[in-house]
Amino acid sequence: MQSILPLPTQPIKPGTSTGQNFWPTETTSSHQPLASYSPADGQLIARVHVSTRADYDRVVETAQTAFAEWRLVPAPRRGEIVRQMGEQFRRYKRELGTLVSYEMGKSLQEGLGEVQEIIDICDFAVGQSRQLYGLSMHSERPAHRMLEQWHPLGIVGVISAFNFPVAVWSWNAMIAWVCGDVCIWKPSEKTPLTALACQQIIGEVLRNNDVPEGVSCLVTGGHDAGEWLARDPRVALVSATGSTRMGKAVAEAVAGRLGKSLLELGGNNAIIVSEHADLDLAIPAIVFGAVGTAGQRCTTTRRIIVQESIYDDVKNRLKKAYAQLRIGNPLDESFHVGPVIDQQAVNGYLVTVNEIRELGGRFVVEPGVIDGLGFESGCYVRPCIAEAKNSWPVVQRETFAPILYLLKYTTLEDAISQQNGVPQGLSSAIFTLNLREAERFLSMAGSDCGIANVNIGTSGAEIGGAFGGEKETGGGRESGSDAWKAYMRRQTNTINYGTTMPLAQGITFEL
Ligand code: NAD
Image (cartoon, rainbow, N blue to C red; front, side, top):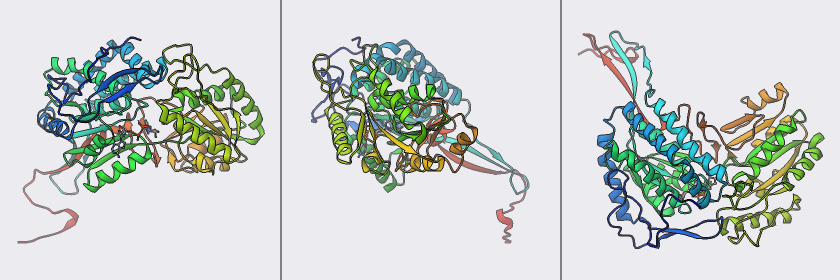
């Protein structure tokens, strides 16, 4: 295992910022340090200090001071700094990708892919820095000009989940920075090291460019550190990625102070497989979607809804494909599936498996926890497939593990109704070569998700599009398209360059 961080004997201290002063000189933390264990082999990688409330307040004050300066830096210049960060991530792609794989447990290819997403969003953000466009409007009054401008918001709090320990931060931070905001990142307590590594990687760029201390900040800890951000009126926007339970708590806290929130929460993604599907495309897309990252992507394929005439064929093909899956250490590229994040995730998998059995669900591919040589961490579970009913409570909720539900449909109406018939609304797909079916699925009467695909699976997305979902997925949009607008405040300006004072709506007011 190649690591970009030395494996320390003392707990690592989180940075108050990453400008000139990456590591704080002192931490006042009395909390227990966070222990980062690798689910790959169960080894303790490092201990990381937890930020105290005093650390947090110091970080916020530094960020506030930095914002006053950073917002005045021309946006294309901010873009140039983000471009240099992209170069740094290119330089450290293998090392950071390896650490992501080792700390989080996703395959090395997926770890490298996650760093590639950072590189891609840096490229995107550089272009965006020259395109923070506002509209101009024709005024109804003579000799008046109307326009809108987009101004930076201030401090953006980024709360991230364990499963994309670095990419989600970058989708937020790179865009927020070109928009003129400063960021405070609260990474998942399950993956603190990858966050520290990112801060270290960009630290050099920040120092070389004399970026004010506090533009990029990090606080570590569990939900309480996330709650500080959510409740803090000094934090203009809280962008939170994680479970729907967390999103509801954050939404309530932020709304209570009338702040802005951007929520990227759980999914329950389905693929409809029509009798007109090309199964040579559909089967690999389903398998990758269901077992990739051991079923721990927000876009993981959790349900497949198959037309009854091809149901048995699809079931048999999936059985055959699952029999070929190789499960093992994520750093060994010959394995398809790595571990889930920890024992808690294994328990969640087992609870759901039991619930499926109690409901009378039949396993087409059997579940199980794997033990023995190479599986000492206890975090390796078998990807499984269960025949189920969409209405079952267990199917209605997201279990963050490789469990795929096989459902049957008769008409396309029925398929779309099952696809939409869950509380979440992130990603969806249909496999069909029938144009009418595809267009019906994409229409306003089709999928109700933020992402709807034709002949590709639900899992993963390109950074160029706006990413996010509806209903209990939270409604937020990140990354590409015009997602940048969430990180800025819109100001409408009207300028009178005439010699009279006409009022809007035709009102006259004689003095
Ligand atoms: P989680 O909700 O347990 O934790 C996510 C983050 O929220 C962590 O940093 C945690 O410390 C923090 N947190 C927890 N409770 C909080 C509270 N009350 N206030 C403020 N912060 C709080 O999620 P997880 O287990 O790390 O990640 C898995 C979940 O994330 C899944 O539901 C998955 O679908 C979702 N996810 C969604 C997306 C998306 O873009 N829609 C992307 C990745 C993951």
